[in-house]
Image (cartoon, rainbow, N blue to C red; front, side, top):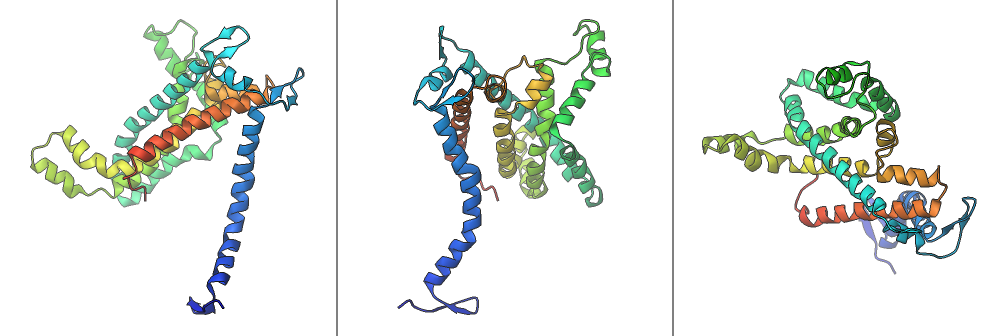
Length: 301
């Protein structure tokens, strides 16, 4: 016979509590199963299939898609796919690094404002989220066009040929990526800066620490939780971004997100697109595993 216990004023048994817990977990389990586990397993199965002559999926088990992912094709080995993956890593790294450099002074500026205006500045940071990413990217196409001030200034300085614009170019891709992901670093970093223990900073200054040493010894460790969240929220989406490189790069600055998009739409090679998607997921999981191993002592709460 199950022993009785009192749970928040209710007389019940452990078995009944266990069943109730399962019912509470069931909606979340169905959600994860339907939107994560089943699509993921389908992607794995699809990556071992073949593309038919008319773009249909032929369910013949093959490792050809992974051979292509490593660069082996009809004409021998080519580094194109690997270069695309490395370029995506580099773009995500540079985007994250510049966002961090810009987010620190912005977070400290907002945190130093009076409480009455502080949240107004935060609202200005959040305002870009009110507009769709595609619309914002098209806006950058206009701002970087030949007739607008940015291009005019570059032409006057001799950095651009007459009647040339800053778009399409790698510079335009970086500008679009940084402006899109900067709020993802500012917001969690601000939450850490707002709770900063300034007595540690004053102690470092009393001990004649330089500004750089004060930052890395007294400020950096305290802001590391927010910074870590910002890095995760920026680097991982930037790895798979395809809208900004496609629109601002003029379809010439190919990243892994664009490669996946092309396979599922223009090329109709779904098996190879699935293999590239899994390769991107593996790279992302490796990065998270490295973070978990080296940054496991960081409190993200």
